[in-house]
Length: 394
Image 1: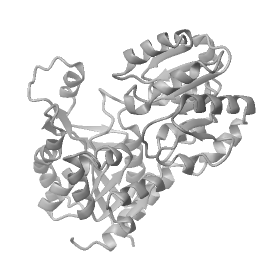
Image 2: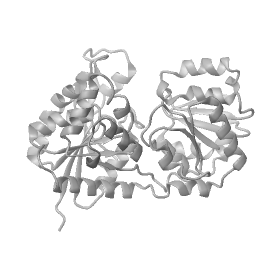
Image 3: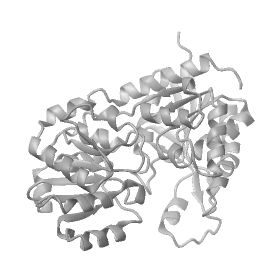
Image 4: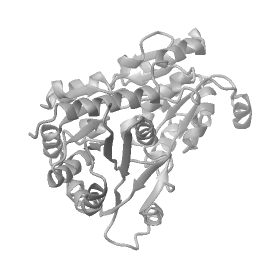
């Protein structure tokens, strides 16, 4: 008989009522794990708040209103508060550990945890390392992209990331390319397992989006980006490429600090009338939006294996993506799309190729048929059990 497994998942990125799209992929993975027979999962989602309680920023106001404990997607989620010092991110792991430790001690006394699962390398990994040391528990850390590419190379946080890797009982990477990047930072490759994301194939599939196209007044070819409007996502390259794609409309799905800059760029490039700033879209509504576009474009500076890529392909929408993370592990056929340099002319050329090719949506979808949350949860449970079987305190 397989022994029961009690996992504590530590995730600073997790959906809540104030930000329901925030870390949906973490919630889906965790729910898939919890659905396994004999597996119990408790989620701790630390909420960072500035020391000044009357901060005018609406984001912090909404976060302060969150319950300390609630249910999300069938999971029990605890949300302890820690003091977030703007401009001093290197202090966050210790602050998270201090805030969470009394709660973890109580929960561990009630029903002992077998392992702590940190969902990101920073700040989750170093925080899990501190908590695990206090309780004498093993912990694992998952790498997803920027948590290694940015925080793992930055002065201050880089040392904490490497220490978290050194003392972890095991590590995960969302793609093989990210595993290679982790090894290049000095992490032990033989302790890193590749764990691909899942996808709700029943929800993310080609759907009739003609009503949405009529509502938006869309005619002719349509391309889109999905993600926060931030420098790292490089939506500027897609806007620049639009000048070489006459008659093509661009949908920018997401919001962020670079929106004003991108609006100015579109105006200056003479394409403002063909750029739509859609804003945030609920995750449940994404299949309709992805089905109504001809190509998803994502020329990011860095990624692991973006869920938006997988979800677009599942909807039968080919992708044009930069040589980032697991791009070539996903784009395995001409129907699936193109991997291109971060260059607006290369992006425009790849989009033209796909629009001329008009691949069948079924052929595009075939590239990601292997991605499912059931498989994701099964592989995660197997990884935790292997880790515990071979665990020796380091």
